[in-house]
Length: 470
Image (cartoon, rainbow, N blue to C red; front, side, top):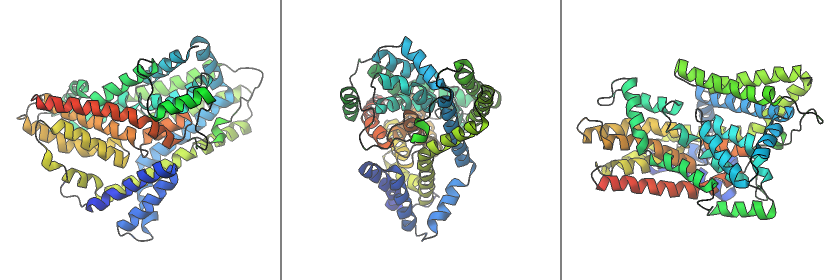
């Protein structure tokens, strides 16, 4: 890490400008665009720096993958609405879960169940539960929070997800961790020490059940929804356009089979994602959505919906998902800029001097949170922090896998998710806003107090363990 060039404090300015502007203007796309342009000039790249940066950031497999995933998600949501599947599912849930509290708890449980993909979970839960939660006047901000805080936190504490495989892969070769079996075993042992992720999931359940009352901006959003019937703030810009929210069922007077139009496509997604994870070691989420989209398109034609209508619906789905795609475009661009400018390297350099055995998990947690907040990527944070922090922990422990090592691994994982939850640049946070059809900055603003509460508790626990000598 020390060999990577960094522009020092200047490297922190582009993500900082993006985040400050996003909260000030409430326009995430504009804020990210301005920050990218300023960052290019700060890096000394000149006028051609911006298009060159975008080509570099977007012309790769990583962006292509999430771009296609977003497109297929948009088409599938449009198909669900055109066939009436969402309405039918909402009616079924609504009949069985009449009270507001039971619906909130059901949404929480659904987020826990769809643990295998942090990309699928917030979009699926938000889209399927939105009409149900709208009926009981639950704010879209609350729905986005439940979706977001049961996606990444669950994915990082279940040892059979892509997150577990990724983190385990980074551990191979560090100290006594010689192969993937050792790595997965160590990761599994670290799960109880991932206080942020575990407590985040618990807090959602406590709030959904009413044991802990809403507070901060979320309380205002909930009062607005219940007392004024306004599910979103006046003047807000939901992160999903009217092309996708205003699609009516093709057949007005009859409901098509929910089994064929909803449950089977969802089963296809789950089967392919889990099957490829078990068989290939990597969940093919994008391919799963593609297969479900093609299947449902064929079913719609057999059910009597004209081909032209199916294609128009698909195009509306693509149009509707474009606000989220544009944010991802600029988020990837500013992340590439941060990498060029050495943002993460600078943050590590200014904190390395503080590291000691007792403070290592706490400082690791904080540093991972700051990097994830600045870059909007948990996985990027893991890739930076694990090769740095875990060898230090193993060195402090004399080459053994003890509590300091397990706590440090968990601190990287939890800190990455914590920073991700607070950052408007995060792709999973963007997807939660998309699924709930809420203004992105409104979602981030209302979620931050809950994330910070859990983050402080997690930090205190790490500090306490450090003071007790682990």
